[in-house]
Amino acid sequence: MKRFLVPLAVLAGLLAVLAAGLRHDPRTLPSALLGKPAPDFNLPRLDASAEPMSSRAMRGQVWILNVWASWCEPCRDEQPVLADFAARRIAPVLGLNYKDDRQNAIRWLREAGDPYTASIVDRKGETAIDYGVYGVPETFVIDRSGIVRYRLAGPLTHALVDTVIVPLVGQLQREADHD
Image (cartoon, rainbow, N blue to C red; front, top):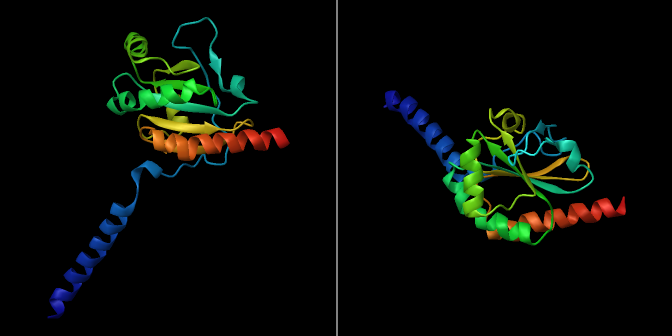
């Protein structure tokens, strides 16, 4: 009888770990950046304008960083949501094009619609690594001081935009107006 207790205890422990993992929402992956300064970048623009885009250029405003790629199917699903959000002009949306072919990315934006104030090219994925990106799409809300206030792994939905992103951006804009 005792020889069955050890394997039974191990099995019970494994089941407890599995159950805890199943209750975890993978879209709420922890981010070491929350409440900390967003990593600086200075990257070329996808539209190949002569001027690179810098994170410092976004200081002084609440803004959204959306990590995307033309080869990413969930990015295609979130594109209409981003387009609707961008049309509302609540905050600028900067696209970080991740490990993508430039021509494919440009074609995709031309076909699907371009919701971005600007898109920057992260060909090697180094900036995405600095942001702790697990995969695409991912979205960050960054305040006027350059502090990361929210991170979402996975595609945005209309419900998330309306219940999380818009209220948070509004709150951050009001806080900055009172400073």
